[in-house]
Amino acid sequence: MGSSTFTIAGRLMNQLIRDRRTLGLIIIVPLVVMSLIGLSFPDEGILDYIAPAMLAALALFFSFLLTGISFLRERSQGTMERLMASPVSRLDVVFGYLFGFFFFALAQTLIIVLFTIYVFDINFMGEIWQILVFQILVITGSVTLGIFTSTFARNEFQMVQFIPLIILPQMFLSGVLWPVEQMPDYLQWMSAAMPLTYAIDGLRDIMLYGKGLLDVGFELAVLAGFTVVTSVLAALTLRRGAAG
Amino acid sequence: MAQNITNGVAVKADKVSFHFKKLRAIDELSLVVPAGISFGLLGPNGAGKTTLIRLITGLLKPKSGGIDVLGQPPSRKNARLIGYMPQLHSLYAELSVMQNVSFFAKIYGLKNSKQRQQRVEEVTKLVNLWGRRNDSVMNLSGGMKQRASLACAIVHNPPLLLLDEPTVGLDPELRVTFWDYFTSLTQEGTTLIISSHTMDDAAHCDRLGFMRQGKVIAQGTPTELKEATGQPEASLEEAFLHFIHREEGSDG
Ligand SMILES: Nc1ncnc2c1ncn2[C@@H]1O[C@H](COP(=O)(O)OP(=O)(O)OP(=O)(O)O)[C@@H](O)[C@H]1O
Ligand SMILES: [Mg+2]
Image (cartoon, rainbow over all chains, first blue to last red):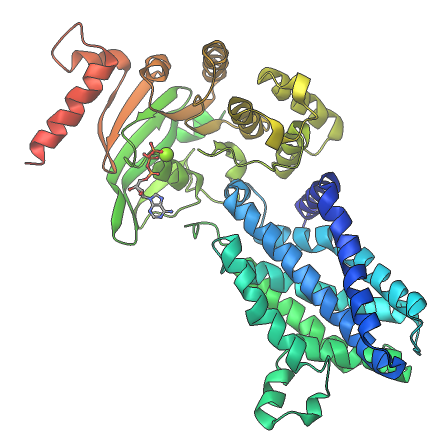
């Protein structure tokens, strides 16, 4: 990781800043989604329970999709060809994407967290900064998952198919709506293999039970491990000389 | 200085083969490109020009045979020696012309920001896009995109330039400007490998290689190739067709 990492990150930020509509959507869409979800639960107790899960799930969804599509475009518009012929390393590319999207994803998460807490006035314990630190790991893992997944897609149509394959099962099996313990054994096993499960567990511990970051150390470690594995896999698929 | 360590050879391909699945795109191709000249790659669609250029960049690895670029096999370590302009524009559409050029300048290690800005300005003016420097690339005309793409390839002043059909879509005036610039580069010792379909480009090159079905079927200076047809008055176009037909004849 060198100065090229930040060159690539800076370029991604410039791209998003110049694309005003996408920038606006990044902020507005999560608010619309959270409003609809919030209004659909008249019972506040349920909302308190769902809110932490929605924070994690939305972070996963948006970071995954944004990075995945943008990485794919890098290849389809031919700029990846240029990058791979240049002196940048594959880790520069992966970390460049990570940092480039990080601030937008973090800003998005911050908006969602504040909106959920203050507009819907949910009851929560814990502290906002702890929620944010936890979300940082969720975002990081989602960005690297997005990069890794996009290397299996040749075009946008294929990339979009990964949403039902990779995101939807996690939404249903990782305890967003009902507790994992109530699922049949084999589904619990699947759920244990999904990063979102740990994200939701950790955030609920912080927000519902007022636990600190140290108490959710296991969940944090699993998410960190997931990030490392997906970034290494992503970097491996970017081999020079392996271009098609 | 690059010439000293490499005995004046910029690119040397030795019985290189490359295939995409079953399709043989490059077939035991051997080629020596001396340093400091412009070398034109000519050949019909699908002859393997782009594939050969990508092999020289290191984007593709030969399935057999070897390639040396300025004395070493291409790798990330010597990537700075090469400037590569792909056949498609390959630019960031949302970014401005300057942002694109400046990005590649940084990627290729132009660290000092003052020198970098100077160089970015220089090449942007050179490709005649200074007036449009802040426009998003997506709003440029086809030929302008082509020029922006060239600017990105030359910004780091590489000793070897690989240009895949750089003159496509350029108006005649710019074509002349480009060739003046290419010639001045070779005079400074830069090596250019340029693929093209036009005989106008070919006539400008110091040496030419005619490609067909993944092989170089003839190479030499434009004059040598014309003379080889046996008709002193032959044009390059006729020379090209002469060699193609001769090959077809020998295919049986
Ligand atoms: N990514 C790829 N996958 C499969 N086959 C490919 C790929 N790229 C090129 N080919 C095949 O390799 C052969 C050589 O293609 P190449 O692009 O090198 O030709 P070219 O001489 O550059 O042609 P053109 O003048 O049209 O640009 C063609 O038959 C082409 O179909
Ligand atoms: Mg080509």
